[in-house]
Figure 1 (cartoon, rainbow over the protein chains, first blue to last red):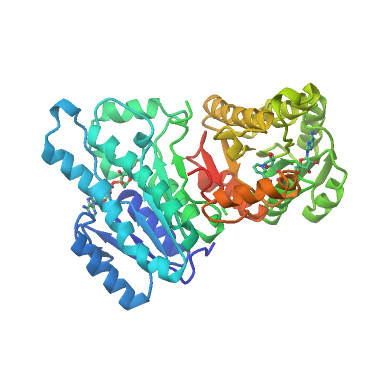
Figure 2 (cartoon, chains in turn yellow, orange):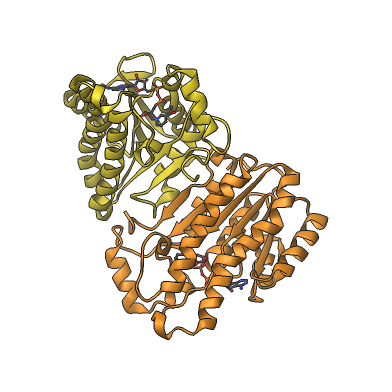
Length: 233
Length: 240
Ligand SMILES: NC(=O)c1ccc[n+]([C@@H]2O[C@H](COP(=O)([O-])OP(=O)(O)OC[C@H]3O[C@@H](n4cnc5c(N)ncnc54)[C@H](O)[C@@H]3O)[C@@H](O)[C@H]2O)c1
Ligand SMILES: NC(=O)c1ccc[n+]([C@@H]2O[C@H](COP(=O)([O-])OP(=O)(O)OC[C@H]3O[C@@H](n4cnc5c(N)ncnc54)[C@H](O)[C@@H]3O)[C@@H](O)[C@H]2O)c1
């Protein structure tokens, strides 16, 4: 398939896991992909999603080089595992700054160009924990629920200007992020997943690509779970 | 889309609207398609897909037994099922004829369960299968004047999720929830109601049936290998 032929896509957190798989998928399907992350490399541009100045610089560069942005995937994210009574404000801010503020800044800085062009697609990466609670994980839950709220609001706000905004809500996915977690914790998520396995990043990339593609022209404001059945039970 | 060779797909309500386009898209990807409808136009539809037409009532369990028997004998194990056939009626609950309530229940709610019941043993033998049930945005909210339809479309979501849990990992079950889509069914609403729905749809228009098909095909495909018990809403933002 070549659903993204001639399109320009920005993916955040593209050096690892789901972001890397998404950047690869969009590129395979014809997009010019600008992969971004905290540290630059041969294929990655530096963009800390929590820093507005980084967004301004990156969007200016991409517009100068390619004229526009057709697709934004707000994927960069970080975990946070404490309970509220143990969570200090600095850790709360770290999680909220990347997951929530980063998503807001990304949308803010691509939307004006998308509105001018009369088209665009944004896919935000939420989590099953946006809609489903496990104990602990407080700031992460809050930030991912915010991602869902921002997705729905932006979808309704920009629909008549040609911009679609959707989210994916991954379940447990085998990435460097989850590899850092205790193995008993990881096993408990897999045990609670009807498919009895974790997902691989490419399986989330497929759902992101579907939502970003022109074939999803009538899909906006939705949250697509990619979770092996976790939420269904 | 990555589609295993030898896919055998059953699509209900395939004589018209979204079902017909779904069947055609599956056929163009190389699947062998069995098209079911109570409407005899399904013969012409099947010709377009080089598929097999079955004229029958999806709420009849014997129809499903025969379909599975004939299909597995002639084409092999069934690997995809799209429960798309549906009926829509408007009406005030106090004045709705009980036979009409029964019809909506049988076609929209009972039939997908009978279909799954009949088809799952074949999918289990194939060790793979993907089922897509077509609900509606009526299954996400409460709509006055369409109580029976609303209740049956909520039931479809419950069916999908319970089946997903029961049939994992080899068989995936997901739901597509269309908003207002330009088919003969939508015409039953009447102009005024549809104008109101379009006004509430952020994208500001009715959807084309061809815009629902990619969601169904994605869920059926191997690209959706980690999606089960989930839902794709195709409604122009109506329910956001
Ligand atoms: N892995 C899972 O099970 C899972 C489940 C649900 C949701 N998610 C979400 O998916 C997204 C990707 O996660 P992953 O599992 O691929 O993780 P990952 O750790 O493999 O990749 C995340 C990437 O984001 C980058 N990043 C972190 N903070 C950043 C910042 N401030 N600016 C720019 N980049 C930053 C990291 O450097 C890393 O490369 C995250 O939003 C995560 O919350 C993951
Ligand atoms: N059109 C919309 O606005 C809309 C919105 C939400 C959901 N849906 C759903 O989408 C699905 C497809 O609807 P459509 O819009 O293509 O409508 P449609 O009326 O064009 O097609 C429905 C098909 O189902 C067939 N059918 C009805 N009862 C049957 C039975 N007992 N046995 C066999 N076949 C039977 C009909 O003959 C018809 O061919 C339905 O489940 C419907 O509820 C439609």
